[in-house]
Every structure is written in structure tokens, then in C-alpha cells.
Amino acid sequence: MSATDASRARLVQLLTPVVEATGHELEDVTVSPAGKRQVVRIVIDKDGGSTLDDIAEASRVVSDLLDAAEGEEPELLGGAYVLEVSSPGVDRRLTLPRHWRRNVGRLVTAGLADGTSVTGRVVSADDAEVVLDVDGHQQPLSFGQLTSGAVQVEFARKGDDA
Image (cartoon, rainbow, N blue to C red; front, side, top):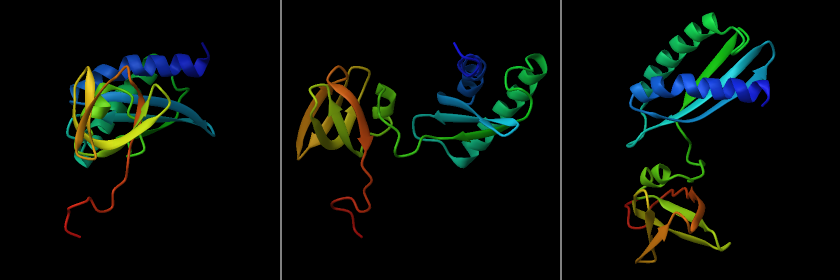
């Protein structure tokens, strides 16, 4: 395991309970060098989405934790770091049941294990399957049938007043 991988793994271990205490899930942590410091990028999410106030609160508690951790484990980030906390963008791949659940109502393209894809609106999702509305017909898909999905950006949803 490289030093960067070890640092990332340790950060995930440290940050997960703190992020969960804010009502969020830790979706991703990346650490990359930027000159003499490290850039720590953290992606958090929760059902219903995150507000700017949520991101600010999570940033505060994560920053406090990292500052304390640096005092005890100076090799963790090597001193100076820049912290970036965000929520996932619309381009995030849908790979876990919670990703699908958080996109109910959105138009998605789902990659299927057989190499094909299907586009439809997410009707529901649980830990076993996602149900898509494809051209007016509900199509249940187990997570074993899916490889991943992508939210399709809609500028004007069919039937919405423009």
C-alpha cells in the first residue's frame, strides 16, 4: 500500500464517524499534492441532498478533526493542507443502492450487465432493485443486472411549463 493509499484509508477511518454525526455519509476522500501542501477533497451526501449550511457545518467539524489529528499524527497530511468539502455532482456514477434512491424522479441511463443500456425515470429504489419508468412501462432491475447509471440533465422536463 502506498503512502497516499495509507493516508486515504486512515482519513476514511477518522472521518466516517464525524461525517455520519452530521447526518451525512462519506462518499469519497481524495488526497493529492499541491505544491508544499495536500489537497483533501471530501464528498458527502445524504437523503434529500445537502444544503450549503450542511456543507459548511461538515467542513467545520472535518477541519477541527483534521487539525487535531495532525497534532497526533503529523505524517497524516504532512503539515499544511487545503480542505474541500462538497456534495456529489450530477455527473456522479450511480453504483450503490443509496445513489439510486437519492435520484428518484430523475431521468437516468442505466448500464446493464449484458452490455446494453436503458434510459428511464427512477420510480423507486431499495437495497434489492431499482424500478425505472421506461416509456410509460415500469421496468424493475435488480442491482445484479446493473453496472452503473448516470443522471441525464434535463433543461425542461416533459410536461413542465417553460
